[in-house]
Amino acid sequence: MSEERMLEHARPEFAKASEDLQKLGTREAVVNFYARHEARLGTAMAASTQTVACEAGCSFCCRQFEVVAQPVEVLEIHAHVSRHFKPDQLRGVIQRATQNVAARKAATEQERLTLRPTCPFLVDHSCSIYAVRPSVCRNYHATDKDNCQKSFDDPFSTWPTSYVEELFDTAMGSSAGFKNAVTALGLDTRDYHLSAAFLEAMRDPACAKRFKSGKKAFLKATAPGFNG
Image 1 (cartoon, rainbow, N blue to C red):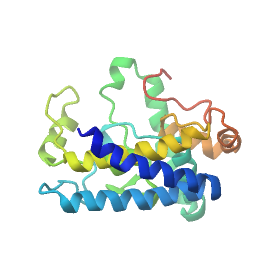
Image 2: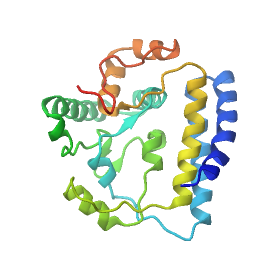
Image 3: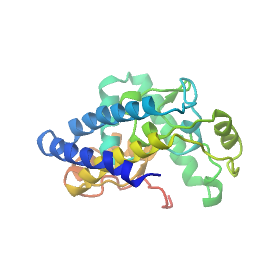
Image 4: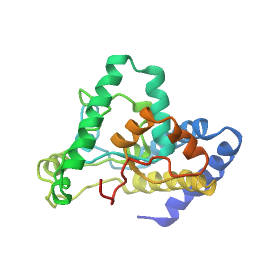
C-alpha cells in the first residue's frame, strides 16, 4: 500500500467533492464523484501490467460478504430504484433484503461469519443498480478467480486475496477523499448494511431528512461491528 499514491487521489477528490457538495447538494455530488472515481480506476488499470479476474457473471463478492454503503450512497440507490424499477422488480428487492435482515438477526455472531447474504440487487449474477452501486463494490477486485471460489466455498479458508496494488491505492484514496468531504459537512458517513438501510429508506422518508440535518441517517439498520 502506498500512502503517497492514495493521497495523490484523495486530495483532489476532497477539493472537488467539497465544491460539488456546497454548490450542487449531495445527490449530484455523489453522481459526479462516481464518474471521477471510475475515470481514476480506469487510468490506474490501464497503466498496470496486471489484469483483474473480474468479469460479467462473476458475483462471488456480491454473495460472499454483506454489502455495506454510506447514507449518501443508500439514498442515491433509493432514488434510482424509485425512478427506474418496475413494481415487480422492487418487490423482488424488498423480499431479498428482508430475508437478509431476518437471517442476520436470527444468527449468532459465530453463525454470521458463515452467512452468504446475496446482495438484494443481484439478479441472475448481474448488478441491477450498476450505475449507482456503492464505492465498496466499485473498489473490490481480484486477480485470481479460483481463490474467490475457494474463499466463497470455505468462509474460514486462508486463501489469499490478490489485487492490483495501483488500483487498490487509487480506489482507497479517491473514496477517502469523497468521504472526508462529506464528513467535513457534518454529515453521517457510517457504513451500514445495505439490505437493512435500503429497507429503512423505503419505509421512512425521515432518513433523508435526518441525513441532511447531520444526524444518524438510519435508526434501525445495523453497521459492521454492531449486533442486530
